[in-house]
Image (cartoon, rainbow, N blue to C red; front, side, top):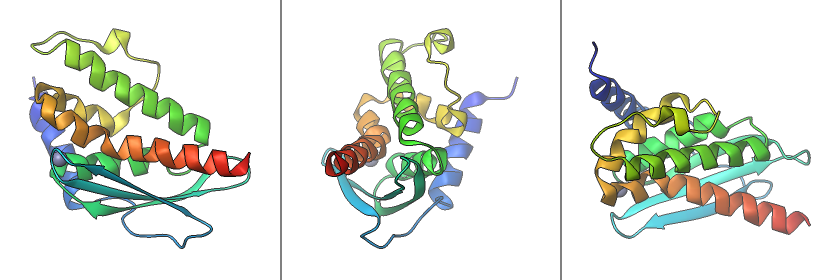
Length: 158
Ligand code: ZN
């Protein structure tokens, strides 16, 4: 059997070395939101361009930090770009559920049956992070920043 951990490590490194959607967007129309993880010194800046129909028209990432925080941000950007805000929130829920499920199951076990019916794709590579609880905040940083940005955009429009 191929070593799943090696495969996951490769995916994480690939996103770290070749981050997707790297850059900035003009604000406005895009919304800029910044996230910081003081435990590790990670910084993620998310630029969100959400159109009137609630679709993420474009999304860019900048910032700096450890490989987990930056590869997670890259994966988040690839997963969310072009999706609706509702889909983005659903993905966020699924990702954070994966991180918390595995937090409870350190030491083994297959929690896939309990995961929501959302295809996480490359994001599944980050599930190994839960073996290092202090790094979970690195992995969830970009998602929390995304959520904050979506909340701010929706609040500004209502
Ligand atoms: Zn970190």
